[in-house]
Image 1 (tube, one colour):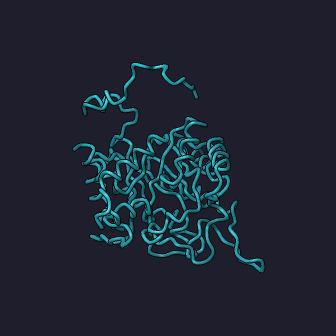
Image 2 (cartoon, helix red, strand yellow):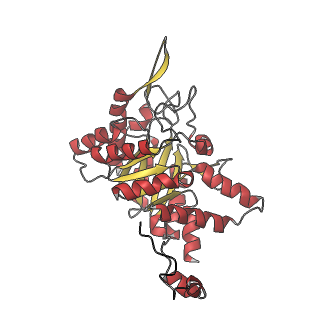
Image 3 (spheres, one colour):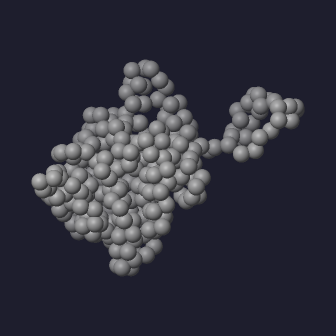
Length: 334
């Protein structure tokens, strides 16, 4: 970083550039745009179903018909993309609903593509919502306890990603944090001829307390233990860079940092180190905390939401995944 001696720019007075709103906008270093927004949505079987998520005001579990309405409203507001999470009717120990041809996400993708062909559809690729035990991989229990079977899980993840892409998903986004899953998915997509389907990898995903409301929304809380054996330790920054490097080597086209606001240092280092398209996921608790504080009159919801997203952009995010995406798009227009 350059250093400048005090007084080397005697004529520069920053406040001169702050007197006019038009001038402030002209010299602004970081911009927010609706084109950067992605809206996460939760889909489950049924019709005319809008089941509110208590911990996430304004967020719902939606049947496919209601999902189309929600996505259409977001698209009309200026949000170009959605990220889909599925909640199956039946869960089992092999996550069979994740890769079923007529699984809930696969149904939703086909319906969205039919009704909203220009909407960019990203699908979350993980097994936790579909597993009876709630973990992101196959589990083996023995005298030593329960452990995740990394390599056998890769086949199911690749199969799930392929089924999403065959249904019409524009981007697949593995969030499981199993070692080697990006390579397994890339090889399977290439094998079936979907060589142009990009992978947005949850490359630096931390074991975080900020996921609490999401567990309610996706009905994905583990029945035993936790996910610290495969999600990252919040204390580790250099490890995050190694994880991102591995995913890029394996074929990731976009990398993600999750959560976002408490990990802006990681986001900055990832973008600075690799220069790859980088997504920031403003996770459920980030959204819910702002909503709760605003509901109590403690903060200005719009101001704090926009400032937090601007911080992610300033740190290097190209893509902003946020439950507030429709509101943000409307605020930007206004």
